Image (tube, rainbow, N blue to C red; front, side):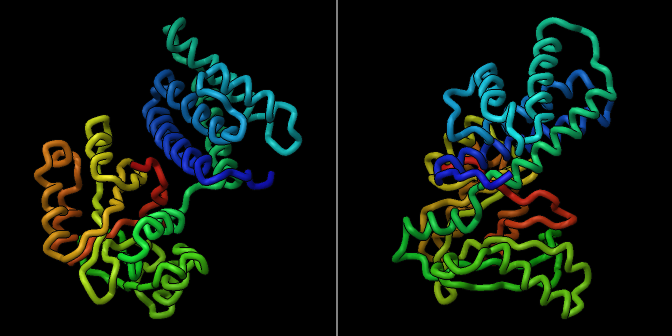
Length: 317
């Protein structure tokens, strides 16, 4: 199946939907491990629901459950390229979810639920293969285009994701125009190969992280921090700040769009998050503290055996 031809708006929506799907798949997997198959059905269905929407953003009108199911059948039910098992599984999960939620008190057959989970994981892999998502390069280009006179450089660190311990750490700087030439992930791959040749221990576990500092020679920053949980209050607060929210495993990463001039001002704004009435109980305090000690923040952008899911675009404020 060929890559879908989505515009930037559709790619942003697809990235959000696939990020939601990862949460549902993870929840279903955990529930299956605990033999909570009835509870797993709800998450299995919503995982399929989000993925199916992502496949139909060029034609889907509305997000009602019946509409998503019927449009999935219309677009892919007879397709030779699209595995029909995913169309069938979506309908079966929709039916089973309605039965579990509204009609039946019985637990479903465990082997069937395990099979649905395996099919859903394959459905997600297909989506990742053919649905274009928003990349970090897209995000950085957006931020640069909003601040072309203020951003001199971007940088990424290659480091062990045991963030708060002493390990080998390499910083790579590049001016914004290089985003049109290479990908951040490609750059990270070559630097990791350098670490391997230097015989750095466990360098296969290393990840790339985007840094908050925007100039090699002066203190210019973006506000960046790690959020443990996301709800309506947090969303309202982040809207007031303006920026990009990425889903990273069970948590979230926030990258502000405002360019902050001067280390003192950056430190003041970062410390302020620790005392904010909404953020103070949801923000990763250790991440903020180590950022202040280091002199810049770093947020992971790639995966590794220790961090198996790369952060993905979730919302733009």
